[in-house]
Image (cartoon, rainbow, N blue to C red):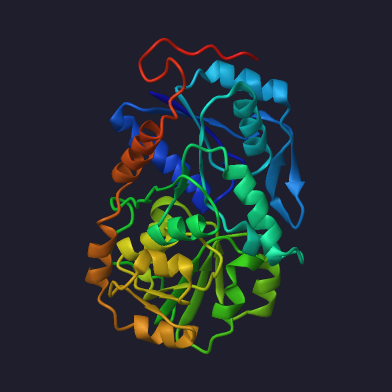
Length: 347
């Protein structure tokens, strides 16, 4: 089975969408499923306003049609609501082809943090975008319920995973004054990092990641340690060396970094909002408090082994199986696909 995923978020971007799609593709290979990606790398791009590190594609309909025809997929999945997602949606609608979509980003809150646009207008646009989808995939049961309450149809659960062979406890000392409070992610306004950096905490505050707000935050908070982007074993070592993972964002739908931290034996301190609440729930692996400072201190007393055992329930293999099963269950396999004669795509 060949699945084409259309995404406006792709390498060299470092974010949860890119990591999710990459790990999904790797894990699906064991199921006999091959992923191809339709990304900004195939088009001219321009810098996203207010976030110049992100490049938005300028896709043309003919080019979209040609790339899809060359991929000869059995199924089409649209991962993002950007220019590529819109063009692939248009392609499928014009040809009456089934497709699925996924909901990764709380764009109403994301956009509101930058420009004064009513959230209701953004939610209306998102509902319209996802309305023709055979299945709108959501990362958690709570997010799926919320989307249903907001008028989204055909919402299904697509859980996430974590690579426990990479993220696990290990004896690492970064030689920072303890305790070490760590935050990992994009350094941008919607991540609410000031709520963490403003806290009066002992030890050391460490920020891993890059983004448009980094320079201003480094200047405003000289006592914090900004390490920039880290990947692979280097990132895993930093997780393992910290004492508490601080997640100040109020706009994330899931937060893969939460699972990476927990798999590393790192308890979570966060606000009691949908992203961390959906991941952690009532499990004794995090402290969720409207007072983030209280949450940080409470997290210091949480068992690191409990965190590791909690994260072990999330695998990318299970995530890939749920993704593929949803496509099959809703009839989003294209005519002649999944082992039959390949469909004819007209460019």
